[in-house]
Amino acid sequence: MNSIVIDYSDSKYKKFAPKKEVVSFLNEVLAFEKLDKVQFSVSFIDEDQMHSLNLQYRGIDDSTDILSFAVRDGNDDFAFATGRSRYENIGDILICPEVCERNARIFNISACEELHRLLVHGVLHLNGMDHLSNDATEPMLVHQEDIMNKLFINPKGGIL
Image (cartoon, rainbow, N blue to C red; front, side, top):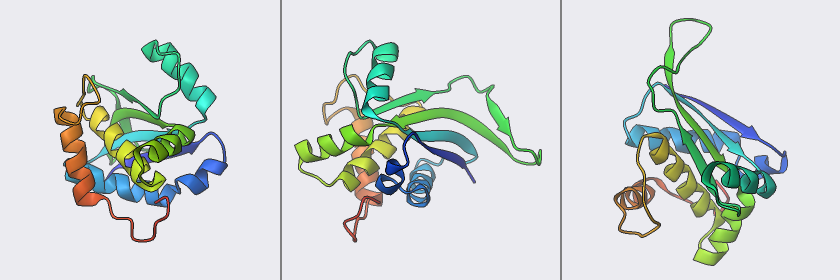
């Protein structure tokens, strides 16, 4: 069992990425990656916030679709009030719905597919994977697409 916290900086993002569906898909990704008893958050933030954070943490003066902040020192366990369950905090994922939607149009795919891809991408970063470029042959991106091919199903055509 995992602990996933979903946060929305604006209530309009709840329709873009409903909590129940986001958590359900992330649990599928975590199972695929054989990650259990992990804790992390996913926050949906606006483009101005994303631009500011991208500049602060990456030195890039532009917005981006996703930022991931991985916790790498194994000392950040999160104990719930029961004291019975322990979860390893693996970090935080920030997603900008406006950039996600813009990228989906550029790539000629649905915003639903792009959001799923970002969720997979964020989990892989939190799990220690990285890439030097956005070249499709990067091992992390190849693995990301493998997960998408196995897990992404969009029969209704909705966001999630």
